[in-house]
Length: 275
Image (cartoon, rainbow, N blue to C red; front, side, top):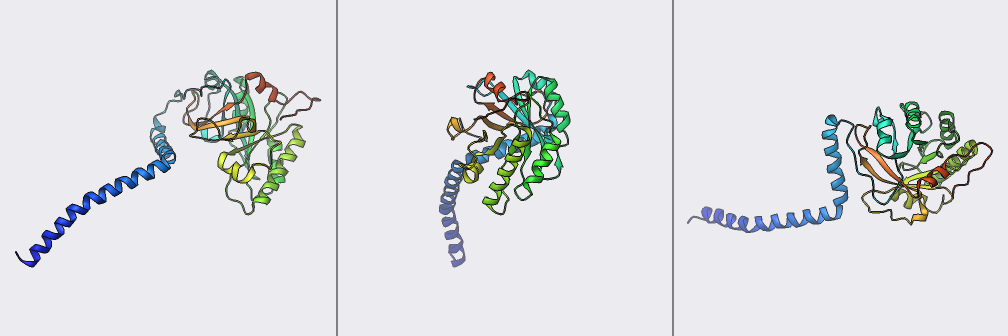
């Protein structure tokens, strides 16, 4: 056997030994990676699948109501497109928060239609503002109050605070406090603070405890925060509700229907004291 043939034979022998070990190492590494990141990976796969099937949706798909809660709701924006609010109400949706504004200039294109449609369907409605930390909070509050005609019987205004790009956390908190204070003064009712679990724990916890908390926390059986810390739980942003073609955020209210009614803005002359 020539040296060249021996070399090739030895290489093939080494390769036959190394290849199974490399495959095994790759398999183990993949399993470990999946175990650590399975929630994110599964979520990504669902998102890709939802995008793939979205042209074929009918608007009649439905996600089962979350067990253990009696009051269910959604939150929507122009992203959901045209909504059949009558069908939504037929899926036992009792409340809806509707995007009104964002930053200092943006008006949601479907706010007025959604605002009127929810009320006409007998769904208790509220409005929210998406907070941009690097813009003036006073102007953001003014944009919201000029846009949203909250009246007795509506749910309190909501400030959505989750935008991760800001220059200074103390400055961001001051802006949030300014918006909440000005909007409370304008409507005479304490606003609700919305945020996702990780952002809230990192930047907001302990600073706005007097405001009712609407918490977004997915892929968990129940929020990690104690029940006394939150009043609304957004448990999914991948739900299907008849009347909406595509996914929508799904929420539950902590308490019965009478407690939801008590959260509404009271008639003129009566103060609201949300705890």
